[in-house]
Each structure stands twice: as structure tokens, then as C-alpha cells.
View (cartoon, one colour):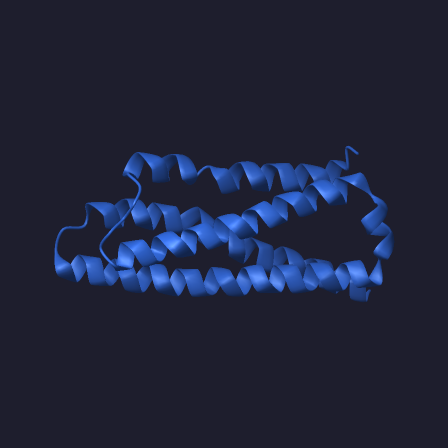
Length: 140
């Protein structure tokens, strides 16, 4: 029973994390086009708050995932989990990449175009699809 609660909270916080990863690049697109200082300040606040929420989601996703693995270490022998962990590690790197760019936007020096952010906005979608398929279908 405990394992089911842990899985439920793992999924809840994963959804929180992904919601932020889906929306933050979209905010960057809008922020890029903002011209007035008040708009810039408003986007900085929105981006910073969203990043905080998604960071909590990421950390708790990791925490509940590790807790699950401590209860069912047999998962570590399964190929699908290795692939899923590779995706989670890559997403954690993407999360850090978003933080670097959040700081650049806050400093008024965005380093990527809106076209870049439109494409980057799709990366978490593909990662989510792959992770869900790995967990549900377990192809390995």
C-alpha cells in the first residue's frame, strides 16, 4: 500500500515539474517580445516563481522515485528503468539550462530567439512520451 502512495506522489510531482517545463519556454517567447520595463519586470517575476514551483516538483519527483527504488530495488535490474533514468537525468539538465536562460532574460540579455524557444518547448513533450511508454509498456 505504501508503494502505491509513493508512486502517486511521484506522478503528482512529475506532473508539476513538467507543467513548468512546458510553460517556462513559452514565457520566454512572450518575454522576448516584451518592450516596456514594466513588462520585463512582470515576466521576470512570473518566470522566477514558475521556476521555483517546477524546482520543487523536480526535487520531489526525484525524492519519491528514489524512495520507490529503495523499496523495490529489483527495478534497478530492468532495462526500461535505465532508459527512463537517462531521460530523467537529461530533463534535469534541461531544467538547469532553463535556469541559466532565466537569468539571462532577467539581465536583459536573452541568448536565443523565439524560434529556438518554440523548438525547445517540444523537448519535454518528447521526453514525457518516451518516459510514459517506458514505464507503461516496459519494452526492454
